[in-house]
Amino acid sequence: MRALSPFLVCVGCAVLVGVIAACGGDHRNAAFANGTELAWMKKFGDIQGTVANCLAELHHQVGPPPTMRLEPAYRLFENMCRVVKRERVRQATFDAMYAASIRSATLGITQPLPSASGSFVYAAASTAASQAAHQRIEARCWSKADWAQLVSEHLALVGLRNQSADMESGFSGGSHAIELAPEICTHLQEMTHASDPEAASYDTLFDWSQAVITVAHEAFHSSGISSESTAECFAIQMVPKTAAALGMDSTVGDALARNAWYVYPTEPRKYQSAACHRGGVLDLGQSRTVWK
Image (cartoon, rainbow, N blue to C red; front, side, top):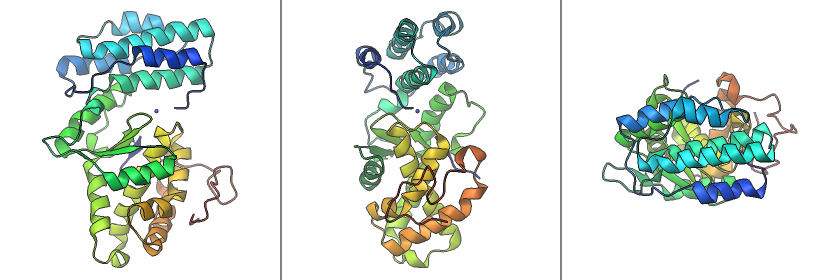
């Protein structure tokens, strides 16, 4: 998840994958959560998530879901708790499975696009995200009305209910999708339709660079990278290539990358890493990378 202002690698045993396949469910045509469902989501998002007591937390603190369409997420988490306890898996694997159940409970991301309110799949951003992640990624641009409802679900489920939808630029919708805020898609469209992008002002370059970073950042999360700082470092290194996939020439891509590195030290601490430098552990070795 990436904020506008300055879910996890699963390496468990094959039986855990089977749990997802068996219990993931399909609510593809679901609408956004109603008030009763959202209240349950908040309790589900408050689960602390430890191998030892996850079943007790689920049964006693959360309870059964109020509607059938939340049943798959509930059963996924319930079966996961039983499996991880029996298999004695590591906490990291449990965290990955917990993230999968949270995504399953996010009803809004299963809606088909385009929607009547203006949400749509952004083909160029999908291509850019897919190239960054080295797997097929669908970039979904949400209208302001849809985004407010979708983020209310997401923030409830990840325990960040005091955060505003306007502060969120995007999040991973699973292994094959990223969810983008309307402002991000607006900036991407402004960039790709600019008559003279090389003449853009600093403020415009800032907006464009942050939009390009968001596409790559969330794509890396979708590929299995949970760390915010790692996803951010990788995303900034990929700015020239991501911009190229969006139709920008190398001059614009390099300018966006330089802007991104200039802003990087002012980003929240969780997005920064001491290993993010040329020759560092997080250096992707990209020929097109522009370093600070």
